[in-house]
Length: 263
Image (cartoon, rainbow, N blue to C red):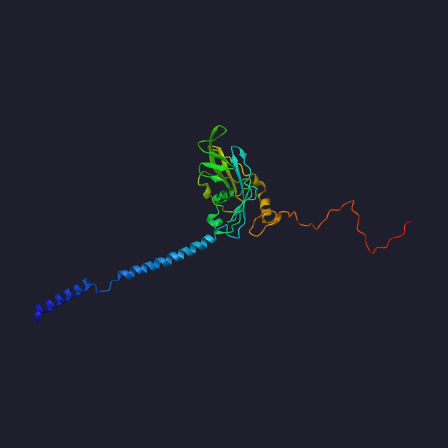
């Protein structure tokens, strides 16, 4: 055939190969590659989520393990307000009308990153934003209310160790609900004070925080299942095992006793 025939064969084979490719009979490798990438990403995300859940579970305070206490008070224009009343919490962050935040998580909602001042304030019925505080049907708001004739400002003073006489508080100016409880023995004063004030007093409960914490842990109170942490109430219908002595009472006669003759 010669060189011309050979060249025609090569050209025809090339055209045939092109037609097969355009006809779709060659295997398309793009789809399996995409599936492979999706599988790899899915496995990676599952592993990341598992590790993330594990790390969250190990961030203090830990559910049914840590039992912390923090002194707490609300300071308005030079005067501390009454303590929030006792309330229970489904997540384990509450108070006993003692000026103390009791932090012993019973669920993930009160543990780790979720153990925040906002969780406590919600349970205590205290509404706190960056500029307004409402409690006990009273409201103090920046831009509207004053202290000592000066514009008032909302701040939160936070002590890392509230019983250390030398510790200084961090003065927090915003995002109060997101403040995290990070360790036992902290202190928090929510204050509405003249703007620029940094001399914020510790909560009154700071002086005996350790004693209050010991009582809550079982030193002098009865803790019921579910960790109510309150003193067990007296049952008015219960029969006491110890009877008071009646000085006018006559002892019952002993049928076996022998009566001695008079004289």
